Length: 235
Image (cartoon, rainbow, N blue to C red):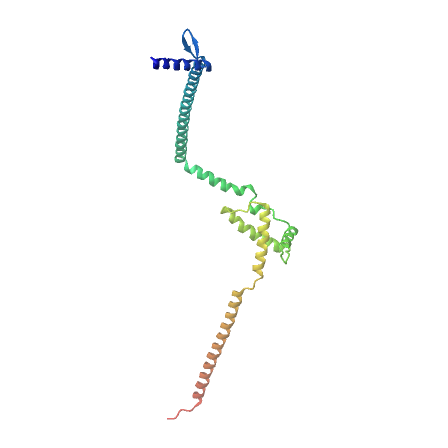
């Protein structure tokens, strides 16, 4: 009996304490808690909101993945189609591309007048260019025309080989260097010619020496024959 009374007192104390804290309220001999009900409602609402957000996020990702897959498939199909078309074009007309490139290269020299019709610098201009190149000579008209003729003949052939000089400034530079090099080549002594002349002279001297020796032998033989002709024969 005492123990039961003690338990009842403890329970009543706990109930009074809870009521004092304001967490629970007494209504019609029942304990209710508006605070806990609010917390429960808030938790339920938050759960629903988070679930809805998760569902929308999953749908968005799913749609995006589908769109990406569709885009990737379309891109791959387009690439495959373009590649097939390109291969077909190359197989059908490979020579047309080559001929197009060749025609482009062959048309490059036509951007400037052919070298044989090129209006070369005047004599005064070319002498100025030679002076700027530190050349120690100047040209007269006859020498300039000779150099220019050989220059145009050589580079006309180079144009036929697709190696043209395509700018005005470059033509002037090449012509100037051509004249300097050609002049230096012409001014060098012809060592081969000198050697040939020397060999010819030595051969001539050698030939003369042999001729003289042969003539001497022949003359001596004639003298011997005449001597024996005048000697009387004895029987």
